[in-house]
Image 1 (cartoon, helix red, strand yellow):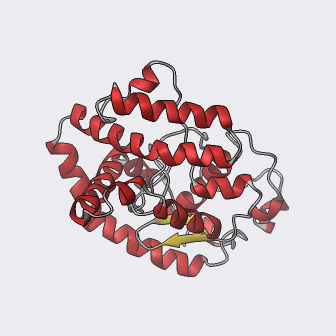
Image 2 (tube, rainbow, N blue to C red):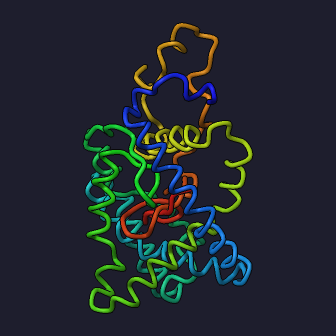
Length: 268
């Protein structure tokens, strides 16, 4: 057992259960999800894969706009609406990201961040089957984002198309993260701890738009607090708030945010 597992992290009281689910998710990824993403990446040229990513980004910018509005970020919400309008028309249904080229910044918001903006506590860290890293608050956010998912409503009566689009977004997102997850597998002493710490740090940065207040000591094991020369955690490096992917690791496109889009992404 690596040293990072020796001291219980207060943010992760369900760690034994979470580690079991993580191993199942990791096994599914290695046996099914990652190979499919590699085939997808190998068959389709980059220009096609970029167009697919842009298409889903444009759809989920609708949710980004809604969450910016709920957080009272009116200029950002207006910019998001402008992005959707411009990319849907001049960008041929969102296949081309015209909005970024003319200076309309891509934002990253979901209902989990909206709850955090309104001071709802994160709650314990949670590893969800297939969906991957989350928390009690973000799990609720995923559910709300799923209920508001544009794919769900636009293709409400066309189940085959709706499910096919979710599957395509799932594979596209996983393909976009192949290099990052290969690095995780090679560099992390404890991939579970690395993923957890990176996820929690990134979500905190996103909620505070890249400028979070100083953290309390609750995430630092007591043994480490006794020695100021030791780092807080052996797991995650600093994760910029606007770094893409959103969801750090993908979760199944059935509930809300993250990676280049605010849609959920698959677990690793």
